[in-house]
Image (cartoon, rainbow, N blue to C red):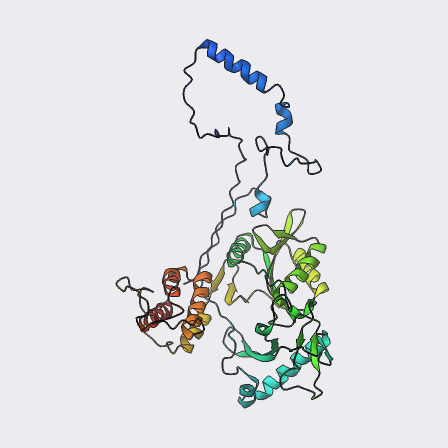
Length: 455
């Protein structure tokens, strides 16, 4: 079920100054006073306003350089703010049309579930490909100066690491590349010793949908890029020790003192976000206030928009020259892979035509159905039967969030947020029983999968 996104950009009305309501909450009633009462009111109002500055002074906008008295009441009457740049990056007043998304085409790359460890990779029939991918990864880590081998300090417990394997596929499902990545086991890091802050930002899905709509209506030139060794571009501030890579230990007993933020470290995403933001700001890019991971640069009447999801960058520019300039700015700072036209972003495949942009997560849903053995199951018309009342597990307490039921609900929650809001209610109902699911809850989650199979 493709998600249609529309955008309208009406000109915003100017802010109108209104009379403040009474502090006591009194309503405006007709005045019952006579002429004498009116004269007294006029005289008292004139006395109260004698010490106040001129009205023209109040309506002037306060300069940024002026000193602000914290005890002074906030002045808002007569001050008109231009809100267009807060939520609308386009200063022009022309109406933006509606972009229709009609086609149901999208695909996604899913990690290889058959190789979850180095031993499984060695036992697979693709071991030669995996071994080549591992050597390529180690070469990149060494080239970027990710760590240096040192003697293990006394009392230090180095964290472990593991290999993660994935196959990159094209739209037809044909494997185009074998990818191996060395990740640290960040779960062993100690807070306030190995890391302090972990919060990092990624672009909102709503922002991507809106910008895709703008791109379809304004015929923007799009481009997709992928930053190589994303987290390896930022420097680690804390001293973190790690064991030598699994399967490639030199036998000296030394450990790796991490210099760069290796994948899966608690602070890796945050350090990369700070690195990316600081370099873009130096080149004149500005963040969108409604989404810090959307950057905008303007040259006269033209503009270029950039969205960032970890290492995936989407560029939308009004002219080819501005698009090429944005690409050159990124290539000047980091090593990237140019993918040309956008094909996929955060598990959602994008298909572009001269008249439309289509998005869908069909292959991602099919991979979940295949993993659950439901790729050939019969479909149903509703994700949740209204006649079924969900109840807690009658077999008692066995609370554990680390179960297959919770994992499946997480995958369904992402699908609901990204492409299928029609299953949101059913998924949210099941999350109440995620820690201790019963047979009834598993049956209901299977019904959601059967519903997705028919969409």
